[in-house]
Length: 475
Image 1 (cartoon, helix red, strand yellow):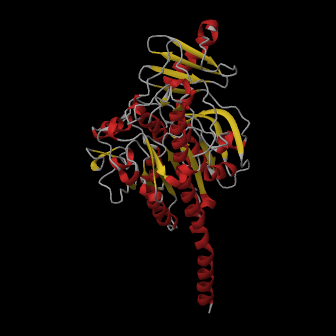
Image 2 (cartoon, helix red, strand yellow):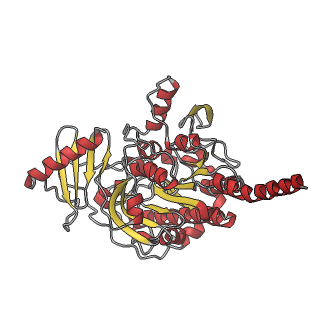
Image 3 (cartoon, rainbow, N blue to C red):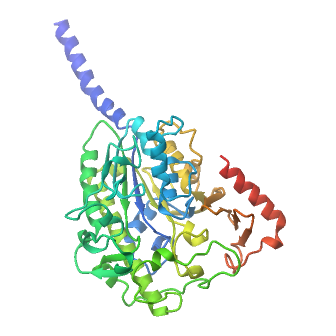
């Protein structure tokens, strides 16, 4: 009899312990990062009131939006390098592939990437779409070679659905139906096409992301680290016609400081933009064409926003939203005529300023807009801090957890670089240092902002910021 009672007690204890054991397995929160290509802060929640971005706006209302987030490089490859490694790196667009080659060659000094770090700490890691530089994270002639991986050891799955299209190059530079860029001059710089979201690559990417979310959220044992890479509004600007219709008769705000800057700067002639068919028009001298470009960019933003909405809705439907940290991140900014530039690749504010929104369950300051200056480099340590994953001492950014808990805290200097110059942004100024020693200094508290170089008038501030810039890049 005593033996039966003892057995019953053991059984009851086991029943009580199992839920706690399962809870312990799920103790660490999931991570969902949504990367959006070429997305400047052209969003309603960032003050662009004419933009329809209800899904990202809703995320901002449930999280903290960083109004002064800056990327560390004004192009896809090096910017995503800092996101995925938490380190400054090469300014080259193939920076991630260069890192992969070092690993493949046996270089043991390469630190783990962010997804690799989470993977080794018990997370299932999945990427869908454009998370590193090439959609799907592979190289080769058609970007689908499994032997040429951008992020070794990082992902349990790295996926790039191509629907009925030939290969991932149809996503990176494609328009409707995965059109592949061969000669860019034969490809229109913008278009609208009747159809649903899946006639463009992002619709297919997000459909796959929803499937992967269902698989990941069904796993009771391991938390997940998932990244979804949305390609629009990358050039060329194309989205289903329903999104363009929102803006067809929309009154657009004026372009700020639309003239080519005087003197030495990192200005360029918009070669990426002008590589496409622009029908012989110049957006800097044709206001109607400029407005057409801006409306098509806006349509792409709304299309990307709709894809974000689908991912977040699926996360909520599964119930995983209650235990998932969400980061929305734009990989860099984009000029829409400011400084007479149509593109990225400069070290002006428009190339480097991008949206970043963070939400996590239980956060106290939902809907807060922080003006703290921060940089992409900070995302890796922040996610480790929020998930209580071992802190990566090799990461060069800082955790933003303190700002998330007290959004009125100050941030820190943000730096960025190209091959021929580097820049540092403070709360009030931007300094750009060229390789030949020439300096630009701009006062963001003035009406002129980045149109008047005041370096000669402020030698002490120049000296201070040049020293701070060099110190940060020497990390």
